[in-house]
Image 1 (spheres, rainbow, N blue to C red):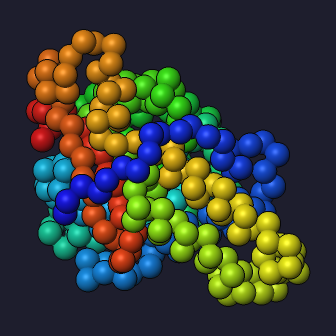
Image 2 (cartoon, rainbow, N blue to C red):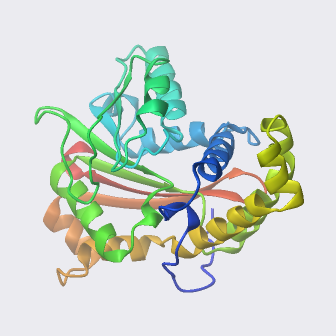
Length: 293
């Protein structure tokens, strides 16, 4: 599909959820909504998580190559789409007669309670209890194996300096990386975000009908929709184009992107795909070591 036009320069504004004072019940509401977003099927290609899985496998060179990797979710939060991607990927690999692959959950602020529940449902997912800083790039896979580092709706949380460290550490200590975003500075992304902002007026009644607190802060004092509006539009403002993303790797080298790829032996790719019609678009950015393509 044609690349969508970016409407304004990137702005690294503050999200409410990033603040230490953000109450846990607000985070819980948004995390549940995001999980539903990954599961909703409004396309013949399946839910966003299934489409993200297919993009990832394709960028790694197909199912046979994908089996060589261990997938490390570097900013796993409460788990996000990783359990859904793992389930679909291993189903596809099994149907092709291939070995299953492992996924590992890591974060600077490990959500052990959520991760224990996730790992209890799949033998192919594990987690690291200790905090791991994505900017410092701890390799978790043995040298003879291959590691793909995943950033699911998380890379936009990093301003340029730490984002550069995140990418550099992935290049230095992993064999591939993938960035998925559902927000951007484009008209379709802003329109889709607007729909998501309105969604609590439906989802609160469905998911939290038993909670006077959630009902109060959705329908009487609309703190939850305001929270969605602030963080939704700020997430859009924070997201990067492919050129802005690759510039984080090249800006101190004096090299163009193609020159950087040739010198370092990596292949950088990007794209977009409508996963939630009419507006919901998945923006993806991948890097793969050339001998692994």
